[in-house]
Length: 280
Ligand SMILES: [Fe+2]
Ligand SMILES: [Fe+2]
Image 1 (cartoon, helix red, strand yellow):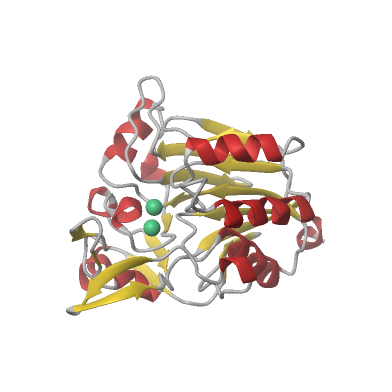
Image 2 (cartoon, rainbow, N blue to C red):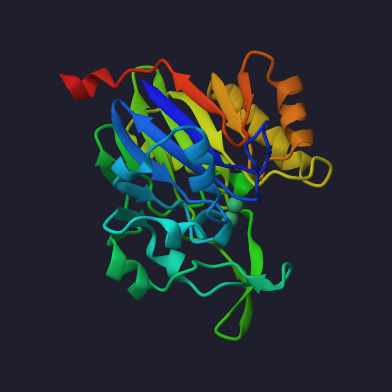
């Protein structure tokens, strides 16, 4: 069984407030980890409203260093296992937003409070559950990535967001792949997940794919849809930086796929079992 509890997400939902951020409590075959912390302490407030006790969760995986996924870090209890790519510590100032968009803590501050594993390599951090490490650009229509312009050490540059990673869970029905913002491209992330896990079948994909503008990104969105069809993806959990107009378009184009819209406070239970090979 995989259980997903959405603690922070762009969309409000009943009494649960949204924010431009992402944080999910993931339970994989009985073991829990937190994926990202959202843009503020909202993930804790929503968790409390949902009756969730986060004090027993001891692992935090950060998809990348952007503030909408990491600003909740100062509100966490000490002593967590924190897994992230070392480039997440990059100093980032967004030209478009005119604000600092990097981690809210320095590398030293994070290491003083937590057990930090900063790695660009993939890692099976729980049974059947992999941190993907650095995602190579593999798919032709995603070579340009979803990058922003940042100011780093006084230089204006395209931020290739090398730290943008994700999680892949090996199940009896194929991989369940989770992204944060999808800066390196959702299809690149899936292709990399196949290499890391040795599993080609994809059951579902979760996250932000950085697909916001249907008209402007139509070519990429159409190719992404073809890719999803080719890979016979069964379920898509879409939110954060996937806008409603893009989700509507996915729904029209992928009639056989179960498409779920994320929102704060939502909870999903996926009837998936661990990958059988692993158990033998
Ligand atoms: Fe994001
Ligand atoms: Fe991001």
